[in-house]
Length: 321
Ligand code: SF4
Ligand code: MG
Image (cartoon, rainbow, N blue to C red; front, side, top):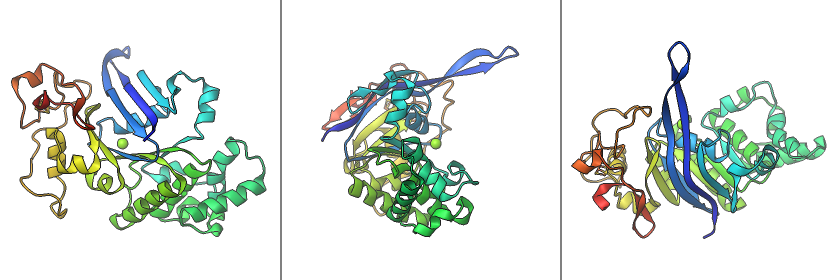
């Protein structure tokens, strides 16, 4: 399998300002030294609690926010080094779908305008051609051609996400970052959208990075899954391997917190103690040590390295030193 995206030591730090002069008083390491690859045609799930840096990672990969440091190689080209014009052209190949389709669709624009806009931006000047392509795209995502003349408020949540997907597909992208695309939808609609996305991946040979806080969502759609905690990737493995043999105590806790209706969950539930620490004042050593049921003395002192423990199964935890 060919890597389409290689992310090396990606960092995104935000300044924390305070006091009457608004001086920098600290730093939030929202994404802290994250390294992974995404293979062409695969779906890589990224999971973690809110505030763990998964959305920031997604945006930094497309430079919708500028990374503080690190390399993002898309088809062997480090896109962090590209100028605005080169980056603008590349955006055709790399798209993002957001959690709240309503917020990302202009309420005053028709679907034709919304879905046609990226076509115009990337050079399809003819309104006739755009109209035709929009209708085609609507059918691809399970909507009807006559929906083109309607406005976002005339659709259900699931239909709006289909519009968002149609827009993302407009210019035949290669990679789509999906930032919690079904989290705002009713459970009954979630699986329809997930099935659609899965079919589209096969049909158009797409690659997805699929961000979610819900392990059950990622389980069905992903080929591999990465787990983030406080800005760090703490585990990454093949989907089945991760769910059957989770190595990091945080992943084990997340899995045990999946509702028991999931027949795959057996054994004891691990209850995590304490809240997620503030990202502006993260714990020393292993960021998880304040909540980890397996913490040892070394854990509060030495940061565990993210490394391959068994074949293609990566983990950052002193239990595997
Ligand atoms: Fe727990 Fe220590 Fe492993 Fe961190 S390094 S997850 S604190 S055992
Ligand atoms: Mg988010």
